[in-house]
Amino acid sequence: MSQAAERAAAPDAPPRVVIADDQTLVRSGFRMILNSAGITVAAEAADGAEAVTEVLRHRPDVVLMDIRMPGMDGLEATRRILASQPGRGCRIIILTTFDLDQYVYAALTAGASGFLLKDVTPEHLVAAVRLVRTGDALLAPSITRRLVERFAPHSPGHQPADQDLSALTPREREVLGLVARGLSNAEIAAHLTLSEATVKTHVTRILTKLRLRDRVQAVVLGYETGIVCPGTSPAQADTPQPRP
Image (tube, rainbow, N blue to C red):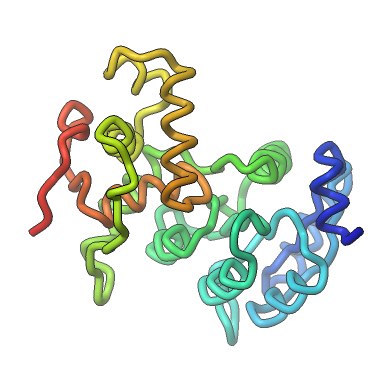
């Protein structure tokens, strides 16, 4: 049985992580923090190309990816890693020095599961790795919304996504619109007068039908497809927005 299959069969096994950062001290510090929490650091990488190689070699659960590295940057490395691992694959957390960096937005659209600032506390770092390993999104949808609203209209060559949403039921389109506005399951349930369990089921079906990794990707897609537009209030989000 492969390492990946063994971990899938034993979900309680410690997460395995690859750290990609061009600063040796950052990698060493993160390794020490993770190891002390019982998390295995399978490999380290000093640039994007090395990160791709190490991820393909070790098949980790999570990658901590610096966004700005010499040669191949973390954005291109993220694209290549996720393209090589369709379906679940590994989860990528982007490391950045700056909050709401435009490169973080690009990484999220490429499939990253969230981002952390490099001055993250040890406790938050460990919690983040464990969270995304379970398949959840690290980034709050409301923060993703801020990223999309700030950077999407200004991205070079930005065009609305042409993904087909016809597989969604009208109710699922409503739920997607509210997810894209940053509402939690509890808030969506209150808005639509549904139970949280029903909302959770709708969200799961949306992610499955649209082949999205997590809610972060659902937020991005909601804007990219025009189902919601920047400045739309949550009360308006369940009404599909026309494309220009």
